[in-house]
Image 1 (cartoon, rainbow, N blue to C red):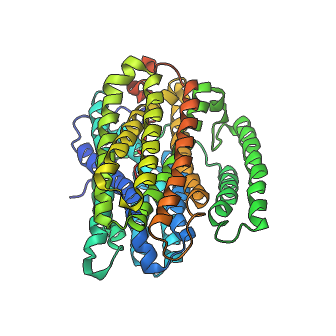
Image 2 (cartoon, rainbow, N blue to C red; image 1 turned 180 degrees about the vertical axis):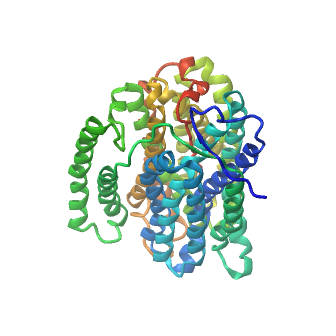
Image 3 (tube, helix red, strand yellow; image 1 turned 30 degrees about the vertical axis):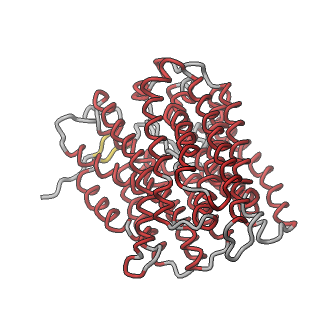
Length: 505
């Protein structure tokens, strides 16, 4: 006989009732759904050359296959989280996973590049409904003394996604199941999504915020419009010959975004429910941290797309060899992330994050030098050292960064602040994918560029990545020297939980 899900308020006495075994099944469901999202982000890049060959996609379309997802996900994150607060996290999670599964089917069945871009945008938008609910469901379903263990499992799952995505993408593309080529990288989500939908209906307990805010639809429209005006011509400009209207759109995005800021201030003063809590930017460490997240997202967006194209189009590696080539990086990220949080940051504080930026920049420059020296003859082992350096640097940054950024934010705004951090991170990825039009695609021509041309474009892109990491290092000087105990992960129990996503492609 099916159980009827009860509704919990976060301040209610039943929240996280230890006698309810269903919460562990619910944990498995939401973690699997989150893993599906993480793998989907990383699985696509490895199949890009195959998608291009099969669909005849232009380089602009390839950018939008990833940038469209990132932009839709970023713009929808805050709204998705707030909808969960208002209408129930279980309800929005189930709606999101159902939409994500349907969008995955559309991606796998897409007849051409344009349809695939549209399906990816839909996939990003539905992920924005699903993902914000995951840690909120965990927060509402588990008592404080169990959350450390649960969030540890969640962190391990993030590391698994970083390694599993490229390998699964490579295997599915290489195997060419049923003659479908790259399409199984999306269709694999169908059985996972359907199982998550059925099990989620049975085991996830409904929860809502005790005082949910109203949606800021005008703010959402202004933010989306301003960002599209900036990103669309940046991504498509090279293919279209940099038309005058493109520069006009980019210039016009500035007053639109300025109007968004002004409206948000008025909205906050009028009813206290803006889309973005602008008062947070008065906190020096938070404002600097947002800059770090944005720049780090740009760096990641550029590198992971062009690196995959470099391996397959420049060096002629197969998808499987390319996927295996990223394993040293992913393992280094996971190992350094654990060491950073448990041993280094408690002792050395901000210096660990700054060291991470410099170590990662050193790895990028080493990769640049080796790529320029060996050209198309570079081998796997010659590439391993710079990738391990980059992975160690990223691991030192990504795990402790969120706590550092939130350390001086008032507790009552921690939920809004964490949502802004995730949104900014994803926007950075979208902007990085757009900037790859200038950094990488301006060197290669549409068609079938191979060999040294792609290598030259890749080494040029690495200068952009190294420069971005130096900006990250400079911005980190405004972060607090040490994270006070009140801002450590346990302090988040009084607020919305914080979700961090490792940007591993």
